[in-house]
Length: 387
Ligand SMILES: *Cc1c(COP(=O)(O)O)cnc(C)c1O
Image 1 (tube, rainbow, N blue to C red):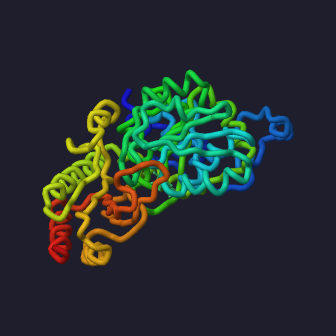
Image 2 (cartoon, helix red, strand yellow; image 1 turned 180 degrees about the vertical axis):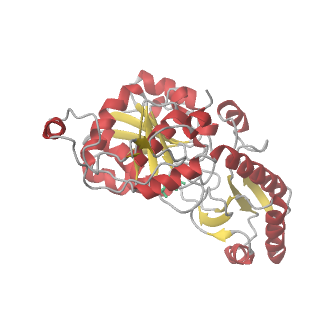
């Protein structure tokens, strides 16, 4: 059966009224700190960790479980758990799998706050991080005796380099490293990391999964090898997402398949058009033939989502870029992406490893669901102001 047929038909609604089930299409919202037991015997089972039902508010309400199960199906994972934000998911993966004295390899193009976490937070626990080039294929030389894990983001959500995942997984397995990927850009629809031998896949649900810019949430999907450990860790940490947010995420998720296609088409149209503009030096979008790793993109990804980067010619001053951004009417100026409204942001690339775009300003465009001609006209008008 198709994954979306399964997700749409998941059954997490068990309210009984008048001996009959209240069989609503959408699950009811469960708000609870406290769960009432049928008997003291059940309560004692819960006390001893043997109760099979939900025993407390932090034990993942039905809405959380429905969202977890849906993502678990899409990621083809053994276990999926959700977190109050994407960065929270990332932090908990690092803390659960690393210990004092360990070393982690981090791809240099990861989401900025991921890098900050590694630099400013892991060091407090005596965990060391080294950064590897975003287009790394051979990671053998970077591995140390205490290397425990490798963190990938493919493509990176600022500069869009793609890692050769098969090669990295091969080397990682040889050295018994845990492989982790931030899979937010592709979503599990366009790339399923665990099917490629990667151990852990992370989503910022905030982006395409929810798709409405109305919630913050993250998920972690792990393979069988790491499921028991991560389940235990999660249950000890008291992590909790609101049922209301889970319902919003589920509502978004159920239309992901059709939304993502439209985001992709709009982005491809805009990226192709921008590439032909005189003022543009480069468009960073893996689906374009001009992308330096277009062959890897075709090998690994079923499709391309709606986020891409644009670099204007060197002679365009930062002030002109500001004028360009301020002249846009349809694109909101915002730091997120993956929602129905098109967004734009701009920032200077700062890298540890060599990067040809280091110190250049990248304009990052999240193509939303507006009409593509309208979006193009908006970009065209704003570019005219600075040409
Ligand atoms: C936004 C983002 C995150 C963090 O997600 P939040 O839910 O905003 O904390 C992680 N990774 C990538 C690639 C992102 O774009």
